[in-house]
Length: 131
Image (cartoon, rainbow, N blue to C red):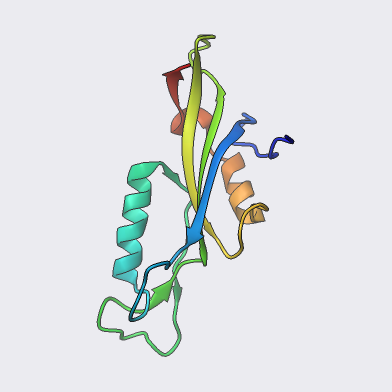
């Protein structure tokens, strides 16, 4: 298996898990809105490291009654990465869960996401765990 080339700060972690879904999978009625999006983004921040994402207003629905109609990119990507332990302990590894949104299915990972990840310090988002 060929590793996915990704860099987080100065670390080249291994991609160990990738989960993708449509951002609004399950939305049965109405339009996505800022309040709904903020709830999802808050949930994402509690799960792992969220790559910053902008909400795009939906034209013609600025006064939508549920918080202004706005959308996130079409695909939500959740990826687990691992690398050598931050502590240097050979019986541990460091892991991080990273979440981002993009317009198309991964792989590939959109350039703005990759660029952002290179500016993030691995030690600020990763935790050591026993092997």
